[in-house]
Length: 395
Image (cartoon, rainbow, N blue to C red):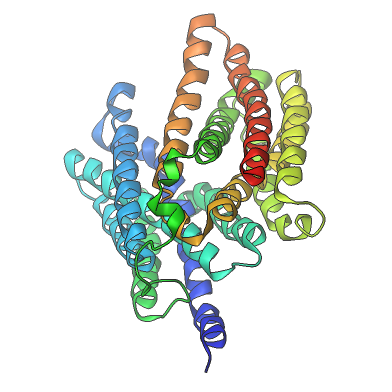
């Protein structure tokens, strides 16, 4: 069997496992927000003490991303994914501990697993779909988004007064462990056995290139936008309504639902649009959605704005990662650690910025304008990226 046919056969088995792990990682990533009320009651914690959970997971995620970069440079992306899924399994099980320090350790381990798996699986799927990178990443990230959507109802359905989070954590940890074991024995059609980073581009210094940092800056701001919108839309909805919004078709649910549906339709979009045009279309929809949402005087109007914003932002993340890969090649993609680190920094900065402006002005509506500033900055960065890329091609 020639290499191309062998790669196709390997991918047929590895691809479903990678997508399932990515789906479970989506649940694991947003699990923290769903279980905080439980830990507040269990340990009688103040809001200041609850805030410790976030830096625990954030620090772990940064560390995991750095470790993932080391594995990537050594052509061991599959190993990073297996270890990451194992770390998430252990971290999630630690959440059952009756000791607060061990629970915090569990969130840190979960963060390490997230930091390992998300970049590694993105790059593995890139390598397995060299001729349809943007479409493949859109589909992959659809699975992550689906996991993020089901996290809240999953916790609601599986947690009980008597058992606490035991069933929740077991039902999440066991499939993750099985996925890690399966992936460890399934071959992947990646460059796992190739000499590490022989490309001339890498040896000359990828991150000395302006285009690489322009794409990383775009990634930083966009991931920040996604996190800010997803993190504050529920609170903002309550301010618009004047009461907690508990109906199923809330602006938060609709935002994430259409955020995921947009990624599912990504492969169709790329039949008609190249990467830059797809990003511009997404940004236009984001701005339209924000104008509608932030001028809302009713939940209905806010829901419409949330739907449009969710659709617009849905394919931007995978398209930008694909653009990085297509600009610098397969070997350079293994140097993508700064790209993912920038995303984590952006998520922290924008989410904090919304709260800071809201606290300063006493009005969350002004804080949400940080999202408008982020969207406008993305337009500027997109123009810079196109100009720098064109200058690079001419040279």
